[in-house]
Image (spheres, rainbow, N blue to C red):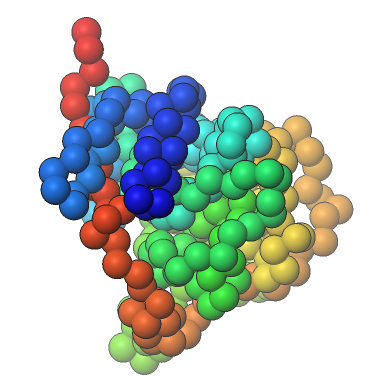
Length: 285
């Protein structure tokens, strides 16, 4: 079957991937129509469990730790986008899919939803998959998935790491609202530094924090072609490229969550033949 051939092809691609900031793929288990992908065991769970959410969790992570985790994720994605062949785009970058090993090195995980880009194509058209709040508008509304869509998702994650806030919050008066919108509003009001997690109690290099936040806004611009490639984002975050004279335009925000949820429901294809679940196993010692 075509679906089975595609699944085997993707497994072959995943097995060849080796990078410090990607969880190592160990194998696959097939049980009827279910597919289980097996990865290395990560001692410190996911960012969603370890860093984000509860204040007592966030207080354990210094600015330096957050910076290193963020850069690790960026380097892992740059490797997938620009160094492996065929190139791979991850369709569901979010905090729960970033794992931490025993040394708190960040590892991009859950390749159960990847899309392989062959023959240098710029994007693929696919059903909307991923998590609300992390989705670029062109992916959420039109189903266009590209490397630039992943750059957008990564930066939402980066904003979460810096601020300690969720990608989407619910307010009784305002309803659901996005972290990207909050960042843009803070930028326009010249209060961007106030977005940094208060649990850091101002114990961080403000210039570097502002650099990270401005790079974030550069990477969520509404027009996808204006967003930098992931490797360029790494250089910007490392201050290897000067951002001071770069023009930043308004971000694209997929804010109509009800519409997107309905679109996901109506365009969702059956995943029973391709569905996969991530499992982890202890690394060999």
